[in-house]
Structure formats: C-alpha cells, structure tokens
Figure 1 (spheres, helix red, strand yellow):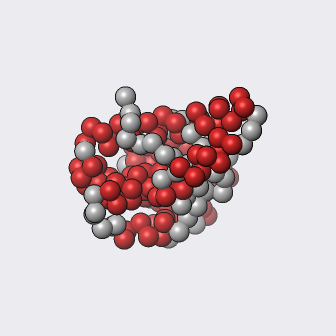
Figure 2: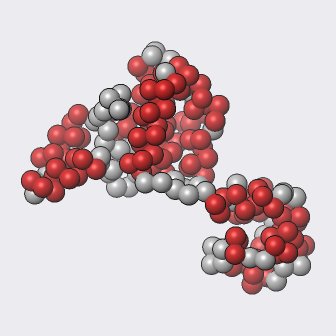
Length: 189
C-alpha cells in the first residue's frame, strides 16, 4: 500500500500527517507528492510517519523497493505460471493472490489487465464462470495498443503494418478487450 493510500485509509491530509508526526509539512508534502523518495529519508522521519499512520516502517517502505520488470518478462512469467500450475490451480492462485487489484492500485495497468485477461481466457477455456470481483476493471482499456515485441520487430523490418493488422485479427478476445494483442499464451518453452 502506498503512502497516499495509507493517508486515504486513515482519512488524513498531508497537513494532519505533518502535525501528528511532527515531520515538517514541506517534507511530508514532498514525500506524498513523490518529489522526495521515502527510502532516502532519515529513519527518524520514516519512523514518525509510520507511527502516525499506525503501520510498520517495513510496510511503509515496501512499495519503494518493488521493482517492475519489462512487460515482455511479465507476460512470459504469467504464461509459465499457467503451464506450471495448470489451468484450475492458476485460476485459484490468481484469485487468492489479489495480484490483479494490487497491480492496478500501483498503476501498473498493462500487468493488471494482462493478468485479468489471462484469468478470463483460462476461465472461458475451462467453462469456469468469471469472478465478478473484477467487473470494474473489465471496463478499462489501455490507451495505446500493446503488441508482442516479435510482431513489432517484424512490422518494423517490413516497414508495413500488415503484421500488426494480422496480429489484431488473431488476438485472443479477452486480451484484445484491453488493447493487448496476444495470440499465443500456451506455447511457452
């Protein structure tokens, strides 16, 4: 959970955080706005903010150390997870993990929507009803279409959009709904 979410959860403004924690307003404002990096603040500052928000220092710092891999690596990891777990266990694991919502809250929209698309696709393939917990996210769509890197490379090499159009036609509907072009999720090595 980000510090902004913690403030919202505690119904607290930056001003109230500053007053209650005795951390200067400018420092709190810079941290909340992202101008200052929380992980670079003094332990005392982090401690005071954590105490005021009634959370551990670790939980307040955890989002600072989560590294985002490339989208291609993420897709590969998800495809391998489906292969390793099997369809039904993948569905169960994904629903229990709450990763879809967590990625979305981090504003990692491609990852969130890709994982939701995979969940919906695997559910359809196995005649499993969709979980309505993510109906709000099913109405979302990425602004810009994401193509597999191999399709982009072939399109660039040919200097034509034929490969892109062909990929769109072949795309799995659950992915295409989110502007993610994906046609092969099962054939992973």
